[in-house]
Image 1 (cartoon, rainbow, N blue to C red):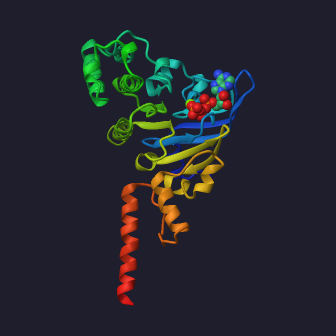
Image 2: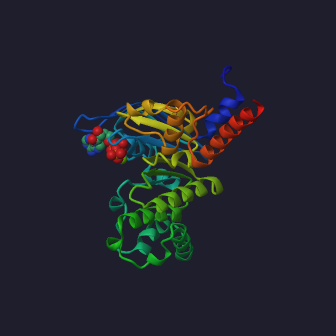
Image 3: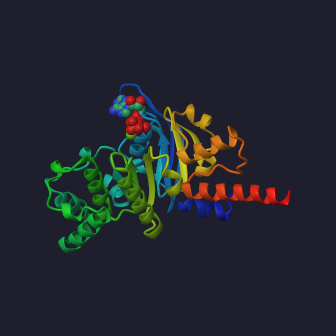
Length: 298
Ligand SMILES: Nc1ncnc2c1ncn2[C@@H]1O[C@H](COP(=O)(O)OP(=O)(O)OP(=O)(O)O)[C@@H](O)[C@H]1O
Ligand SMILES: [Mg+2]
């Protein structure tokens, strides 16, 4: 006990999900997760980024207690998830599947979004209010009476998110919530998740391929490759050079690659590699102003 400082104790209680998977194999022998250590702290918005087949979905299922046959542990608020009932987990953690057809099962949008809150014991009136708010949040309020089977893929994704919003979970695990959405829908979905995170303090971990949007919205990233975490940190420390991305089958945000090439191939002396358009604009203006001032001084 003597070694534990108060700050360490505080940090421990702030960790909502602590994942430590030494190895997980599917029944056919595929090693889908190994040497994975992840901590998701209260109020964080983190991303799991990796190429197809790198183990993102597997990891999220482990974090939600859907896969149990692994060597290691997952702690939810300090308790081993294997000792919790599905209901205990479900009260705190909501999961959005990669494929909405695996999540939606009721005949209509309204009934599907109602299922969660009713199951959690909310009254019909409260459930109705929650459904309307959730459908409004994902801009699907006009679709309440529509049969699920007639929705487009992107619309189904939004209904999955609405189902979770209506339940009001403290922790959300989302498997590629933006895949299949159009560019504006993708941005809106990320904005909605960021708003939930910042304004309602919902802790979020999401698997994603949306490299260009990540630096705008996410606090921290874990990069997965062949079932292992190969890098972890804030986006600025992850996306440093295109060649670092090749071996993990990923790419830099486009604006970052553009500035990187100007710096290294055209020798324009940018001080840093910005990851967003706003940052790139500031960096370009700063560099040109400095250049012009130096020109005037000579
Ligand atoms: N039920 C299963 N049985 C056997 N192998 C599986 C099963 N599900 C996934 N795998 C394998 O586990 C590895 C990780 O798969 P996973 O679905 O976790 O990857 P992912 O990063 O989510 O990929 P994607 O970006 O395509 O969704 C892959 O090699 C995959 O073939
Ligand atoms: Mg997946």
